[in-house]
Image (cartoon, rainbow, N blue to C red):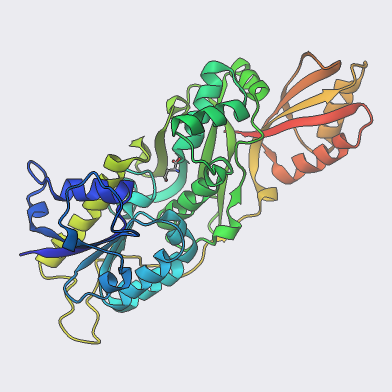
Length: 436
Ligand code: HSE
């Protein structure tokens, strides 16, 4: 039996996917039943490392997604359009889809999965989060007996690389970003990574699976790492923390979730504190399993292609046993409920003001008697309990005061900060970060 694959895109992930498909030895035997039927590329003239028959390549991507011979479309072109339209067209032509496209799924997942359910086809996306780390399928299948309470991930390799270097070298964000760009670890336009948008796409997808509901991306709180300076890294270190960009989805109550991305002080003993460089990790807490952590490479040709090909094999396996075949026009096949998207409602996301968390804050103030007392009184007036207050020294002639709170309601903390900002003795609120 042969299953025909149409590949959209032959960049890093597309090339890695072809390499696995063409070298099935000692991998799953079902790989030998997969045939690359067509590959859609932007230019036929581009020099490529793969030695491909010229008639395999086409610039007509529409012709691939409508080709009656193709069973499975693999979308690895990325970006929003034409990826979204091609995926929808493939679904309309009853093709199963494998995609690595977190941006398109996080924004258009509702439209794509509604169309897929109606057409009776699968849309699988293991490669969209965590690159080669198997986390989507475990959330759908292996962990499905659990009530998931928390998903916390380091899901962006670029920011983890930058923060790790800031921590080990003591450098500032800007200079390490520039160096990372030169070395190819950060994109020329680093916005999606450093501003947390890539991590927000990924946690929206993980939250949707963990909590069985759709997530509106616009409701995901997102703060990047641009404001994390060398001073924060150094103070965090002294206080027993490292700073990580965390993507967090948590059950707040029966009705509400928290879904957020922000730089966070992580205690050095926490399992995520030692996930360094470009590595990703996702820690899931469920009832009754407790904590499980998935760790590995979150990007790159080989790891991401490993996830893409596992999705292709999942679909091929279903087709091989005769499920997922369109036998009667207008009667979609029944989809495997553990593999297909089975929810349609939207989760309610709690406002950040309701979040209860610890905070770290650094203030630059006049060096007068009573300034620390005033800060403490103001926090107390807003029911913000302080765990520690340290006057760390002088910076530019101003006293540098670092505060760590106990668990407090974010709304109360922000009200106190507003008041502190207006104090004549306070020159600057230099930094505010949440603490895990
Ligand atoms: N840009 C992402 C990262 C990789 O830095 O982790 C692709 O998801």
